Length: 172
Image 1 (tube, helix red, strand yellow):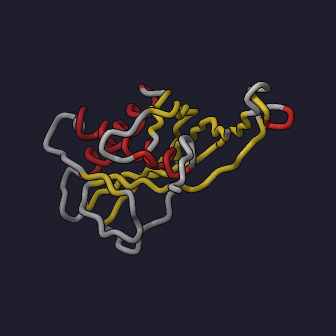
Image 2 (cartoon, one colour):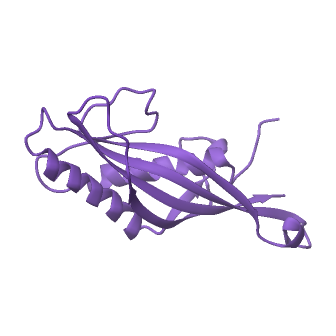
């Protein structure tokens, strides 16, 4: 029997990644000569600059009700999953004379993406990736800039953003 879990972590992180990918392709990057790619498997994936990377850092599970029961008749249990994801903007200052502008535009785009969209559709990817049914919402709780470690290559510049989000994970 295949695993079915409409609000599992696989679905939540996949839905988050899908949102980032579709926002970028639907709205494009800020006007100007910049075009960038999004990567979801960094640091195991080589990057082409300028770009954005998405790394899921983990989180915690919290009880939402006494005994975790939210629907007494059906005995549905639930947890609130609080997650944190790093979204980093990258440019190569050696190959790009406008690297400061481009890096700041990428940062502004990431802030806009999450400040404009405080709720992201949660998809049931376990059901299939072609046209997955919806399974709830991911709630964006905030985005903030955070310190980033220097890259080994001094020409590579990065702005690191942390996105806090949550969703309700239900178990029948």
